[in-house]
Length: 390
Image (cartoon, rainbow, N blue to C red; front, side, top):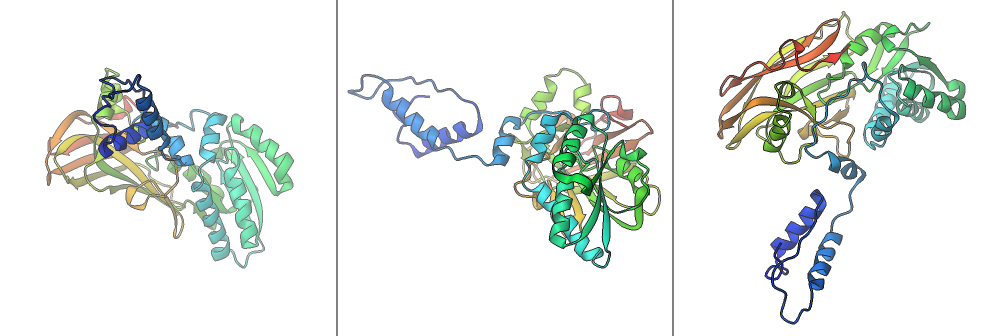
């Protein structure tokens, strides 16, 4: 950066503040010095001043910064046991657990006002934040509860055991097994879970809750009660190049969790798949739909951004979908479905994509294909490149 002719420029100072807040940086000072200056100290002092003008980051921003445009494989919590540090990150979310607490409290007050004691089962309890949410909700609602915490991950079980001994006592009954294998002696009035992924259903919440529904009372409720995935067409040469750098087809047929930064959404999001819990009949979790968009500006289409909106209980929602985003929540980043070949689009063009959610006894996977403005091959046929294991 040449400084001598731009130190007083508002544009330059704004650029410097932007750089220091968005990327890792080094400054190289070059050019002629101001007349009478013996060294570059004045420039270094000015850059230090601008760097110190950087805003203080919120917890959400501090968490997100390292993940800007960073491609991550989605979690596979049924196949893989989450590590303690992963739980620790999720537990810092200031919004998600407050909304879960609100949902449980409203359900207790709204539906179980006349019942003496309510049975709550937290399935997929992790290290216990939903257990404590439920306990606080019961205290606020002035309701007696019987609480079960069901968890299969040995990394989380150690923490749950410690919390039961030191904090919860007999108020919580721990059950160490897969929720699909749990056979309780009584039915749950409220089933609480946090099994959602970046696309809503992509961490197998439908399959897990289908298995758990059998121990929910006939008039019982699930929190969440429903969730819907959303898609938007996306332009991001950086994400496309990141996938291309792997040098194979497999990575173009894999959805990625990513916090978009150098990316542009080309049209408002539209709903894709909806799941409801509980259901009166055994669920069919296969899905297929076609979604159409009208592009808002000339650009290049590199894939699709995916989000979700979940109804926890009636008016209580959590959402990563931009129009209804839960401000301050960072437990989920969006998901990115890449296209093998970028497509030039113009303002007003129709973009249409077909997407499938495919299910067998062993796995779940997505397939997707562009149909307009020009057709693309079907990505990930038969789950050949990516699937979520059951």
